[in-house]
Image (tube, rainbow, N blue to C red):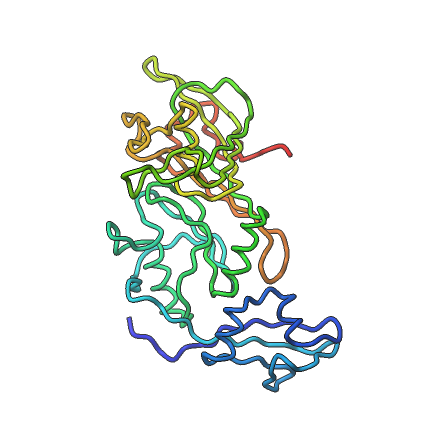
Length: 316
């Protein structure tokens, strides 16, 4: 795919009061890194049609446009053509559904065909010259909603939301055994397992991790019992749900890395059902949902087969 001349990435604001431009940009969440890129890498700050420096004094009603320079993309990210299931898109964010079996970003084991490769291919066609900023990454065999920021500034704003626990992510999982409690919280630190570059475990010197669990159903096949749970993440540690469920003795079905039985499904039975957050430029609360894929629908008991009736819902 051949690149054409880049179209600038723009953010537009209206000043609400008299304020120094530098302070105004800080209030709008512009990071020092983004401001440095605008000042020294080919971007511009335009006030009422005139280019200005951060020392300019804004008046109420002034229009401020931030023109970001084109972002450099690492050599490891190659644009590819492929199908995308788009839930929503605007100038700031792209929300898509990722199927199980597809990597989110290129890696040694999955250098091509990842979600990022295909999104970058879309960017090239759309003449949107930015790298792919993944806000909510999913494991290769986890399906569901993924949020992408369409430039580095938006990524910064979204990451800040996640750090302040104002970004809501909810999952559906099928786990081994019967969980008798209705709701509970797992707060156990997670770290890398000694001798492994992939596997994580609960360990005292790990990073704080919190997962809320809501039990929504049970089923039994050939004498083996299973539980359907809905989970809310408050932190985003690698393999968090898989590690926490294994720790309490209920590993995910299909999760051979963490001891889950694999005779009912060939991948971990985990789906990101919904994400909710404050839109980074409009400040409106937005929410996006992904229906269960067919391989997980087959595991549902007959009385829960209706997609409409199977919603993620946590009290509090």
